[in-house]
Length: 231
Image 1 (tube, rainbow, N blue to C red):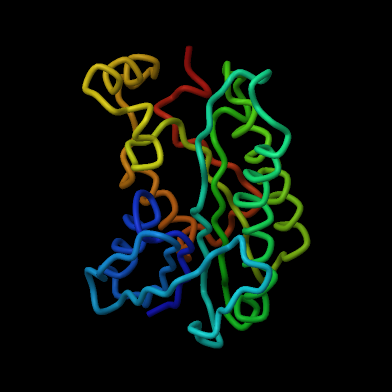
Image 2: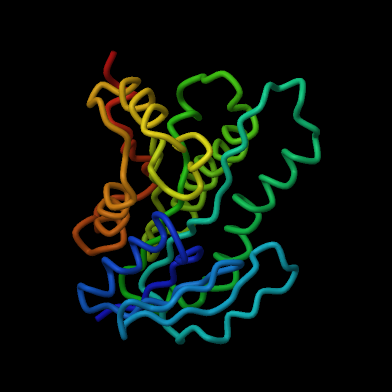
């Protein structure tokens, strides 16, 4: 049994990942901010955490962590001319600074493990230029830089990888997938002709957190229906 911290485990990918790890017999410490949920397993405990706070209270965690997945994010798609600079800062604070604060706070717990792993989340939009994606791609581009640099600094004791999905059917993407017509239109944009599910991404995150990926670090893995590599 291993100990995992899943930040943002109340819905979407984070919730799916927490349940998957718990079903495998691991102890999961999940966090929520606004949407408190009931644990679906005795192996999951939920605690409130607002990553935007200056001081994070992580006293609910054990002395050793075997892995961390940082799942909070946002999808704000607007023409560049309509985005206020403050909006870029808000996204950066949530998606990058929040991850930095959490990882700095739990570094000693990760180092107590024999083979700890960190999973962060980017987006296919970092490598492919999409209209109206400047706000989300800017923050997620920083996540990819953080992934590679931190992987170098924390090697060999802690591995750091990222997943770059395409659009996934989660509450976060509900505005973009709010009807069957929108879901089908988005599915047709992908070579595999479907949109991703939280389980698709959670499967990869589970692999990266496990010892099965023990020779992988500093990678940004695309789970995107083939969008980034197939025309």
